[in-house]
Length: 294
Image (cartoon, rainbow, N blue to C red; front, side):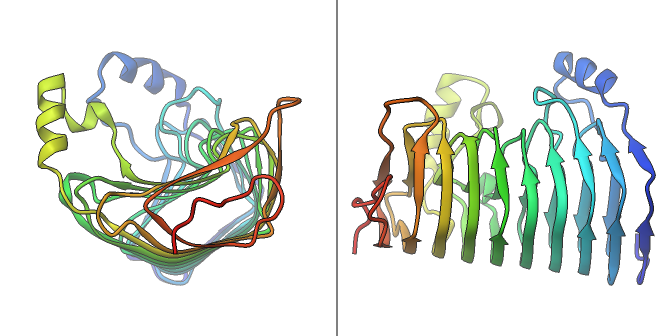
């Protein structure tokens, strides 16, 4: 906390010994699990060359930091391990993650509120839930993310690929986001925006509470200026492109170019689904994206 100019490097390993936490917290969902390694308000931070295994919760947490370079890491946990994100980022700016392997039970990288100028390159992600912006806007909160650029990354056997998720009823924006030269290898939900994301258990404990919550939630975190260029590979889901935007303003200026994927299941055709998503697509191969609105 509040250490500027910190450099952590070498071939060592940080072992969270997380299994006892995962097992115990299945019984007690409220139990507080720590992050294995956390940085708070550390500017000009450099982390490289380490191995991170089996964190109790997320492996690395970066909060309130500026000018961060993370490289040559290997982060691993079992695919079924709960909430073991590789790197969680919040309220941080000018951060570069590159040349690393991340395979865990949750997001390889999660970019949360009030973060900007995040660059991710040459990362092999999988297993896990992909690289995610969000979730943003939980409980009607105002949160912003902008200038996130992911390039030359590979998603292998992930539940999701390039994902943006915002809560119904949230406020703020996610904008100026790009995914370029991305390779999918048997990835689920390769391209997904979900502007109506909801964790049912977090929203309400009963059906009645959920219905009341859902009907009272209005507004959306604004999503705009998002591009997908040069996304190739294979998808385990026939619905390879899913833009599920809210009923209000929806998603604006979505650009899809040079996307070419095949189904991981022989003989299946890939397709796109859009709900209130506005933008352009020049994809003339599978999957075509004719559902974007002007």
